[in-house]
Every structure is written in structure tokens, then in C-alpha cells.
Image 1 (cartoon, rainbow, N blue to C red):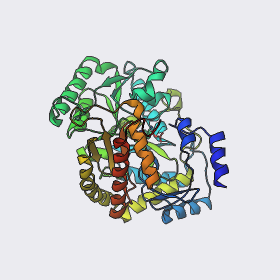
Image 2: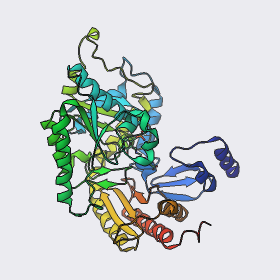
Image 3: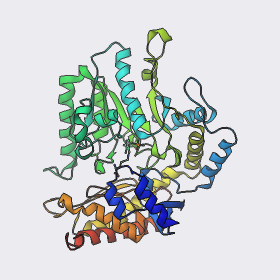
Image 4: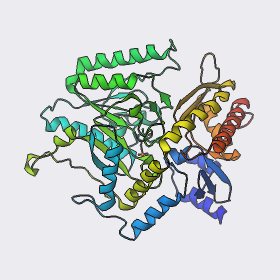
Length: 453
Ligand code: LLP
């Protein structure tokens, strides 16, 4: 019975990234899904406006993926990858290397975006140790970067709201400014790009001998507020990394698998990372499989006889899970068969037209889009770009309204995330944008106090 389930959820659960007092006021339990629609225990339907936290691709209950998992179950659900491979993980590794940016030749599996980045960071660190350059131990990251919630990934993250409280627990990363155009005094993408690259160059010039790697989210920062990079910035970072002998770690956890209109975001600028992380969309949003892809150069630094002590001592119990790898293989088959990346690129164009209207709303400050990844920043005053008071929770209230209207998404502060599954039809995109608009108007028009007190 739904009421009992709700009570049990409030009594026993502690949800991620959730203030439980909010959940108690507005609980939600999803029971099923079909296509881009999910249904709660009362039978109310919602469009999946953030792809179930940025990962669903083909919609829910995609027949081919369901079938691939069932078929895999007839062989085995899981066996360890520590010291032994398994069939679907081998086949998936080959497929991943075939679609990955040039230069990436090796696949190291794990189970979530955070573990994939944690692994990339440890690999980059040990790479230099193994090469005898033991002074290269530092990491560079961009302001507002996000790579997951483990201690290592928080260390290369830089979002105050999430990371500040843990400061003394984290290792120090060198933070350079993200090339954010919206609030930059010049408002000019090229100027911002040049300035940011210049400060990175200055840092590299001074400290390159201590720097192991640089982590970034290519083309668009996710949790930091859906911040898009000016064209050319990513390529510029790559050149600087090469010039100063620093490993480039591209975190494609959110941007991978077609969401930016290319299979991987780095392809937009022909960038070839030394390490690349993938997760979320890898299994079509079905099962927790992640991977860290490495170049042969990185791999080679770990290769040798056991006594040489070059081994990468890292691994998780569920790494390379067969059910997950089977789902991922089916996912990649659908990408190929349905030419999904091209389709996503076309849908992104349509979406940019649909979103255009939102710009006319009084409190929409900025609309940032990269393929099917969008962030709509709400501000109190469009001209001065002054944010709403933190306490008003305008972003949160907008998304609660959207929920009522039949679409699920989550805000990042006052940035509304809109990241529909690649499978969303034109009609569904239209409907979702209509709900976005109504939710935003509702939350930005009513006065605080009048609605909550
Ligand atoms: N890297 C990137 C670029 C990501 O966007 C994420 C998760 C991760 C790594 C970590 O992957 P995971 O361990 O979750 O599989 N806190 C926000 C949303 C977090 C964004 C999820 N991205 C919220 O409260 O909505």
C-alpha cells in the first residue's frame, strides 16, 4: 500500500544529496518506467527531464537491453575481474576502444563515475612514480569542477557547497578559473577563453615539474551549474598539457555517449586525453558500470614483472559486472543501429529553438546548452544578474512545481537542469519545455513568504 511505503521510506531511508526534511514534506517513490516516462506508486506519470540523474539514454524498459540482461543471467551474473576477465567485459572493452578518441587503448573497469575518476587520479599519480618522476604529485582542476563524492574526487572538485566542509580531509589541488562567460565583465567568450588559458599557462610555467595531471569536464561542467566552455578552450588546455608534460584527464561521465551531439565531448575539438572516464550512459542508464580509459603510454608505465612493483593496486568487488557489461553492449548496439549520436545532434538543434522562448521570461538570466545538456539559470534581476536570495530556494521550488506538472528534474542551486534522454521525441521535448516554463514562471512570480510561510 502506497501510504505505508511512503511512511517506511521516511522512517528507514537516507537519500543521497537530499535534505531529508525536504523529502518528508514532498516524498516520492518511483515504481515503474516505460520510455521517457516514470510512474510513482500512486500511478502518477512524470517525464524523465533529467534522464534519472543524467544517465538514461533510450528510455526505460528498452526491449533490447532488458533482453540482453535476461540472456546474460542464463550464463552468470557476476564473477570477479581481479586476475580474470569475463566474456562481456572483454567484448565491451574492444567496443569502447573502437569508439573512443584516438590514442586510448586500454579499459579499466569500475562501478561509478566517482570510482572511474578516483582511478584516473591514482593512475596519473602512479604513472609519474613508476616513471621515476616522483616529484609530479599535484593535480590541477577548474573552479566549480565536479568529479564525484569520494575523498579523492572531492579533492579534485571545487564546489564550495559540496566540498568546503571537508577541506581538511582532502588533498590540495591547484584550482584555475573556469572560463565562465555569463558573469565575466567582458561578456566576450574569446576574451574569457584567452584569460583562462593565460592563467593556466602561468601556473604550468611556475609549477609544471610538480604537476601530475589536470582534470576537467569537457565542454560543459555539470554539477558546477551547467557551465559551457568557450570554443577553443579545451583544445588550448590540451596543448598546454602537452607542452608541460601533464596528463590530461577528461571526465566524460556526464558528457559521454552522445549527450553533447558527439559520442564524446572531446571529439568536438579533436582533443585526445591521456585518461578518460565514462559511466552514467555507458549502460544506457541501466546498471552501474564505469570505466577509465588509458593510452598505451600510461598502460606501459605499469607493465613489467611483479617484483618491479609497478602494478596498479586498485579494484572493486563488482568491477566488470557481467550483467552490466551485457547491458552496455546492447546499449552500444542500439547507438549504432539507430544512429543515435546524429539524432541527438539534430534534437539538440530543435531543443535550442524550443529553449529560446524561455529567455524572454523575466527571471531567466542565462540558458546554457551543449547538445542535450541544458542549464537554465534563474536570477532576481536579468540586468544585474543578481541571484535570488539563497533562502528563497527558487530553483528547488521550480522543480517541485514541475514535478506536480508531470516532469522530474533537479536544480543545481538556481540553475534548472534539463537533460532529456536521447530517445525523447520532438513532441516530448516540446512538452517538457512547456513544463519547464510553467514551473519557472510559477516559482519566480510568487513572492517568498506568500507561498511558504
Ligand atoms: N563526473 C561527472 C562529470 C559527473 O557529473 C558525475 C556525477 C560524476 C563524475 C560522479 O559519478 P557517479 O559517482 O555519481 O556515478 N549533486 C547533484 C548532481 C550530481 C551530478 C551527478 N554527476 C544534484 O544534487 O543533483
